[in-house]
Amino acid sequence: MKKTIIALALIGTSTGALADSPNWDKIQATYIETDIETPLDEDISMDGYAVSGSLSLSDSVFVLANFDSVGDESDFGDVDLDSLNAGLGFNHGITDSTDIFATVTYEKLELVGSIDAIGSESFDESGYGAGLGIRSMITDFFELSVKADYLDIEDENAIRYDASAFFHLTRNLSLGVGYKLYDLDEIDQDIDTIGASVRYSF
Image (cartoon, one colour):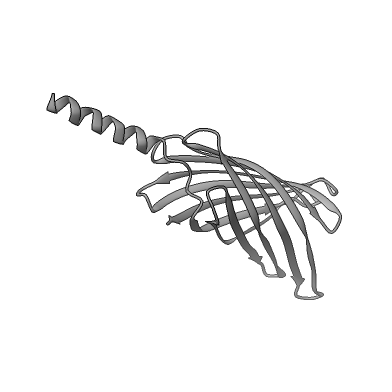
């Protein structure tokens, strides 16, 4: 009887671990590589970093922020692209281990390009975004997330797709990979980003 009770306790502990819901209290740093499609059918390739995080305000409300910065230098000049989004999110558990969520964000893009012999040009635009996504703990150590955002920046529309997978080394530390795509509807061009992340959850 004693062995049976111990076995049931262990099974209950294991099931509880598998049933953990996604943790919305987190911060992460990411190395990113970005390709910008151009009208000349030649991509501009850049690399840089991203810093992002979220913080729960209640069981179903959180704040979020993300900053990306990439650039490229050549013998003729350089180009830099920065993006910022920050806002409010709402999550709802559809199972013990899976949340659906919605976000409303402020969006800002800044692109600076320069040619040594000519000079520099830049644009700085802002707008808003609205997104829907799903995060799921597939197991107690493996997490998947997908999200799509509708963006309206200076009256130009775009869709941002975001997918990531994280392997949880401990309850607090995890490593992940991600892919982000900006589908720029007005000019029929794309911005693709891949990244490798380190996340700390608290």
